[in-house]
Length: 197
Image 1 (tube, helix red, strand yellow):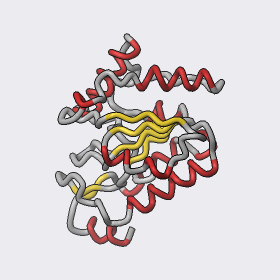
Image 2 (tube, rainbow, N blue to C red; image 1 turned 90 degrees about the vertical axis):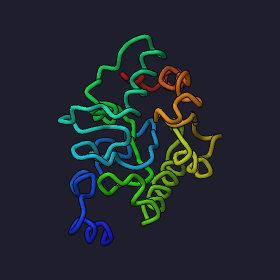
Image 3 (cartoon, one colour; image 1 turned 180 degrees about the vertical axis):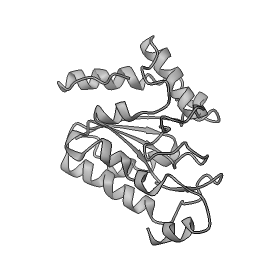
Image 4 (cartoon, rainbow, N blue to C red; image 1 turned 45 degrees about the vertical axis):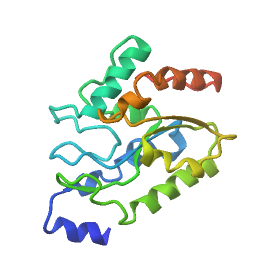
């Protein structure tokens, strides 16, 4: 946090200080049903607000990865997402922890805050969820998310993996993964309320 504070004195860092830990604000520990793990925050102005893959409600441009997520929802469920403005707070409020591996980024410099300590922090979050909860659905899209696999007990939890929804890699497994219908089938099986995607 000291490093980020110093960086903010001379650079634009996203998200805003008040938004860094929004994932935990909107999805309290007791309410977690699903964990979707992303990479690092969007690096353009007025996008990142502390939830993986989500953009703040005043953002007028849907990032390409999120566009692909909405496309996959449509292809999988044969209906549009109710939340196509790009703000995924309604998902978070239904029990989906939208956790990035790295929680801050410098403007226009993706992955600029890799290896400053966030990975240690988010490893601990995943480890605690793995240890203290059961029947959590972990959705890991892309290589950064898959680095968390060794921290998850697959006998105790459910794990869905694919490539990242970015246009660069979506065709390698994300498109057609059907993770949204699969997640709801698992929730029905364990007698939990399904997600309105």
